[in-house]
Amino acid sequence: MAKSLWIVDDDHDTAELMEFILKGQGYTVDKFTQANNFHQHRNQLPDLYILDKWFDGVDGLQLCKELKTDPRTSHVPVLMVSAAYNIEELARTHCADGAIAKPFEIKTLVETVARVLSSSNAVSI
Image 1 (cartoon, rainbow, N blue to C red):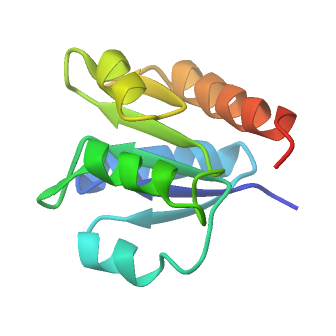
Image 2: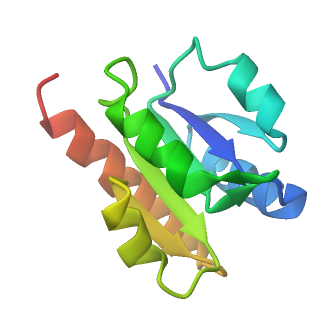
Image 3: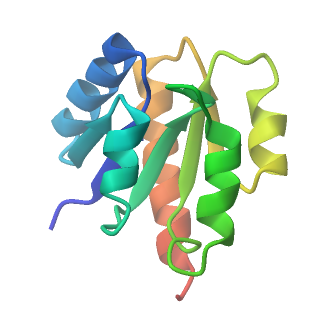
């Protein structure tokens, strides 16, 4: 069964590009470009969250921390994607499992998603 990825990014073009690339890699992808749509689906869980730092007025870093401290979602890896110059450091301090700086190379996106997913699979939950 294909791994399920949720892209949470209010930049429609970036979300579309990531969706196209990752579907081409065999993943099932849902994208959320509005905060209310994302929050309505939080009763379901993906295999990986891909979050932008800022999302429709929502602080993606705070959302990441909430997901990682909630017992129901803490085991789901989070990958932060942002144009913030220090996204790697910010992601680490907010409990993310990885980070990618925008603009990104396709190869970087594909390899990082695979690495984060395989790292989370190595942990017994």
